[in-house]
Structures are given as C-alpha cells and as structure tokens.
Amino acid sequence: MPAPPPRFGAYLLLAGSMTLVGTYVALSKPLTAAIPVFLLAFLRFAIAAVAMLPWTPGSQGEAQLTRIEHRLLFVMSFFGNFLFSICMLYGVSMTTATAAGVIMATLPAVVALMSWLLLRERLTPRVVLAVVLAVGGIGLLQFARGAGAGARDTAWLGNLLMFGAVVCEATYVIIAKRLAATRTPLRVSALINLWGLALITPFGLWQLPRYDLAAVSASLWLLLLFYSLGASLFAVWMWVAGLKHVPANQAGVFTVALPLAATAVGVFVLDEPFTPLHAGAMLLASAGVVLITTGPHAAPA
Image (cartoon, one colour):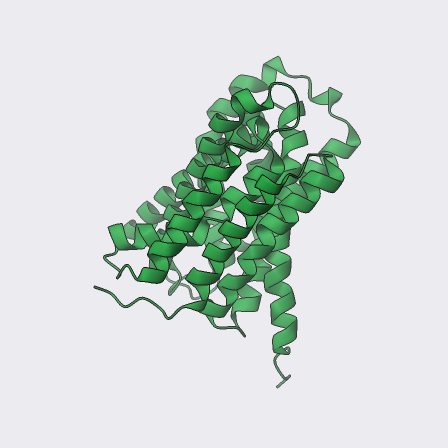
C-alpha cells in the first residue's frame, strides 16, 4: 500500500485551493465587464456540468438519494450556486477585486455565527472577536478609494452583494455537513451544479438572444473555462484531498490565501490601487480567520 503524501503536500493542496478561489473571484471581474451576469453564470454551470459528468451518476452499489437528500441538494444549490453566483458576479462588477477577496475572507466568521444561530453551537469569545474584526475589515473598505471615477458610488452596493455571497456560501457550508457523511464531495458538487444550471437557465436564455457570443474573444473563453472548472471541480478536489491529511481546524488557516490571491490579481493583473486602508482591512479579515481556525472546536450548546 503506498504511503500517504507528506503533510507538506497537503498544505500545498489547501493553500492552492484557496489561492485558486481568490484568483477566479478576482478574474471574474473582466468576465462581468464583457458578458451579462445571468448569461455568464449559465455558461459557467453548463461548462462545469459537462466536465463533471463522470461524477454525476451514483457509483455501483451506492444507495439512491433519499427525499431529504434531494431537498438538501436543492437548498445547497439555491444558496451556494445560484444566489452565490448572482451576488458574487454582480458584486465584483461593482467593487474592486481586492475588496471582493477581503470580504470573502470573512467566510469562517460568518459560518461560525450562523452555526450559533442555526445549529446552536456555542459562541466563544474568539468567535465574537473574529466577527468584530470581520465587520471592522468590511467597514474599512467603505473608505478605500476604488479604481475608476464612478467606482466609489457603486462600491458600497458591490461590497454588500459580496457579503451576501458570503452568507450564501456559509449556508451552503452548514447544510453540507448533513451530506458529507454519505456522499462523495465531487458527486455532491456535480449534483448541485446541475441544480444551479436548472435554476439559472431561464435567466441565461433570456439574455442569450440579446448578446453576440461570437464577439467573445478567445482569451475570454479561456478565462471562462478556467472560472468554470476552477470553481466547480479543481478547488473542491484540492481542498478535500488536503483535508485527508490535515485536521480541519488547521486547514481553515489556509483560507487567508484567498484574499492574498485576490489582492495580487487585482493589483498586478487588473491594475487596481492598493491603499493603506486595503492593507488594514486585509489584516483585520486575516486575523479573524486565524482566530476562528486555530481555536478549539466549539461544542454544541
């Protein structure tokens, strides 16, 4: 039997997964500038559905999905795919990629807060402080100057939509706990992607006749392919593979790679400004991530 990969390799997978997430969140900004949001989300789910066909049917001997699992898959897709994609794509089109990445870094704090509200998990002082730091980081972003003359006028709405995307993703994470014990992560991802495709299709087909797909450049098609596969397949696989060799409370620390990657893409690729306020917001968000993920697991109340 081959020896499991070293822990350092697992660390690379976890960091790579969060770096990929931060990268595709930032690079979705030029996509939203070129393609209408509903059509963009429709294309993303359609491409991912084709790529994830091997994991869509159940494996041999696997029990059929129960009625409760079907409901959970729909709710996960409605929040984690459908609403998340709309909020994230519209949000990143109105704010900067740097701000979007920092707001996404508040996910661990939001998950902990919603776990307290919905699952009655104990709210520890570390969680409270992490939530305060996350709120402070988002607050600082409201004073940061955006890229472009009218960016500041829409940045508050873009930041609000990005936070809505975080809440949608936190709902997805919490519901996923119910399915993790019986279904493989890639099959769950494939099934909720299909639900996402079904939900977005009417809106995508509504925008399709009004847009000339032939006008999309080859570079944008490659970027869309990267976004589709990165969001639905590679980031999930890398994260799950890393978790096999690293405790969950240690793995969460690697989510700090998300805002770092988004910031790097925003500054060095998209030529966005990076001010001391951006740096302060990132430090606050990163400190909140470390507080949440390095503390002891909260016991149920």
